[in-house]
Image (tube, rainbow, N blue to C red; front, top):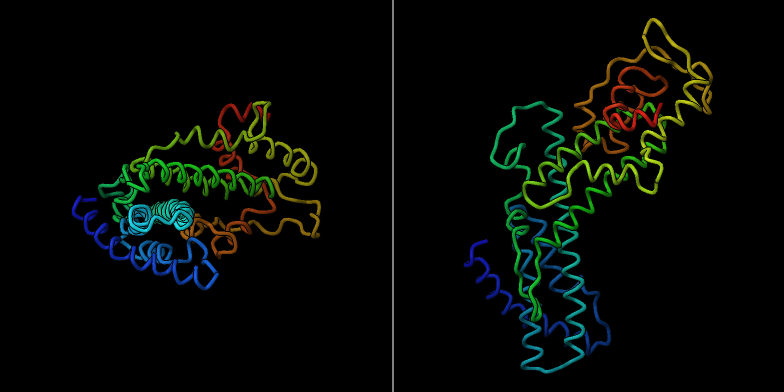
Length: 326
């Protein structure tokens, strides 16, 4: 962000700090203090992050509290008010990091999902998927490396990068957990979801430092395991042995294994389903559970096991996972 922009934010914060101090006096006299993120700084933060292109204005509540802190110590000299201010600073900073990182991660995922689903030519000057992937305001916010706050300097860039890293890792773990809670036929769904997450990770790497995708995926796939076989390969092997081999038979006409023993709901494989549309599935907010695209994909790939499932599974687990699967 240009220096002049920071200057105007600080000037506005100096004016707003008077309002914050008045707010504290009123609440203190009434005997009830609002939650840290429910006061004036929290309202400023919500307003800044809700408008596209002005994500850098999210620094306003931090400048406000910093100015108020200087006044509390130098002019008012009220220690208990300074302690309340420190708590509010911590809460607002935590909310800023969490909400900004979540907004960036969600926007980038939605953007790359639309690119992958539409197969449009790739163009633009931001990584591989075009400038629209990252809001300019958020991009300016993520570039902040030195923000003064109550007598110290915080590296907002590193805090935001760490939160985005956590979101990517948590998303990878969530996708694997969903696969573990379903059958091996959901390997196609898992691969399509992973493709979106991997592309989003590649886009985010252009803006902030992240661990490599291989490191993120390996850590999520081997979480809590020590035998070298990942969670995806282990679940696939268990489901193939316990379900596919015992309850499926080869359909030579369709070249796939179909269920011949009724499942728990008494269903067997029906007619050969049409080829599902993965682009439609991806476009529905990355296959959000409950969306029409997600329901269609699950229905069309359930109840049978064939080449699409095997290909997706092998791409997910790699050569090392294949050894464990065998």
